[in-house]
Length: 283
Ligand code: PAF
Image (cartoon, rainbow, N blue to C red):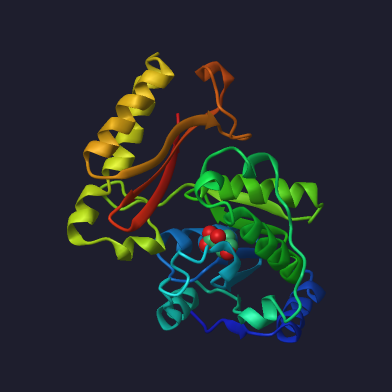
């Protein structure tokens, strides 16, 4: 039976609830989100539930990971349905701080990321992004002190950056990545898919199909650069403005010269109309 989660909006309330969990010796998992929850997020919540006694979900649309021209203002905010979905998953605690709680007046510190944050993928097109993500996720980890934190593989570079940060800063949290949840036609679930027009939505699965065909060709021994170029041309021909389509080392995200340099991940980012989609698969 589902029950209403505790909702904390300020640090004292968050600490009180978490202290009670800790006093009872209960393990705590955190699922960081920006709300607008879909089946992909709920998969993360279920994984958190499998791994820990208590599940905390944070909902915070983090302004510092959006550039001024990006969609912070229009990012979907769906509190009532998010709450109902989390209640149905038996979430114990929702951490829903306001901007002033996360970034009080005079806030002046940030986490600077290197390694997988500087590999010429998302960082090339969204140079503000990983500083904002690392700082907010670092704060969430310190505030919630989870044993486990669960992230989707859909934001693959983000997963690598957060994993590296948690390790480098000894944050004492195990970062777990979960496979991307897809629509039946292969489109990766994303809160931003609501921006797609009907026509764009029909075209969007080309990204996943192209990655799959590219991975199949590479596994069969096709030359990497030429195969990626064929895939890139197909994505562009479908109507996307391509940011990148690359094969990288799955952990370091460094370029690879051959599949032997692997494990290998294909990563893509492309805009259709005004919506920017990202996706990735393993080879
Ligand atoms: O992936 C997201 O939803 C966000 O980048 C995260 C990890 C919640 C940080 O704001």
